Length: 187
Image (tube, rainbow, N blue to C red; front, side):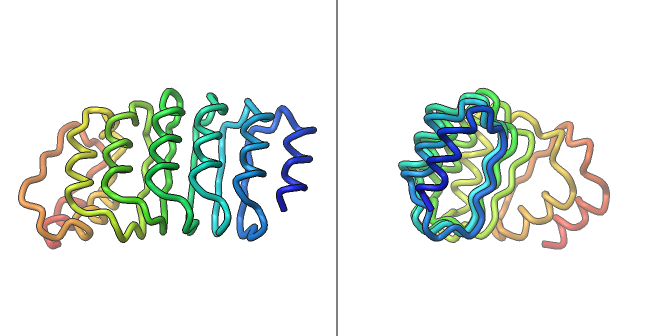
């Protein structure tokens, strides 16, 4: 619970990686303690923690300036406010972003597109409130410039989620193979 996480935060100031998986008693209080006491945090993974929400992520973004990797999955209290404040605050070195099964909207995708200048690894999955407009805004915001990391599999997955895609422009995507292009066309 929060008491245990606060003790870890109090004693482990050099903590770099934290994986919180299926911790139903953890709340923003524990995450805020980590943010306040562990400035060397580089990787944070939060999965199936129903009491962790926007306030905790906001603190991580504000106080953990070395954060390189964030993964958030199946946390119902996490919304646009938390994701957007985390991404806009920690944008300088954040290179890996995984968001799965969250209630975020197109707004969060726009923030990723605008602030994600260091992002080289982006995974978006099970985001029911995100539309094609969000992907369009994210792609046109000029922040994500690492398209050389886009693979054929990623392209096919994107094409499946964007069923009414009318125009697709690829430049310098060296990891996209012929099978990836065929996969896009077949969708």
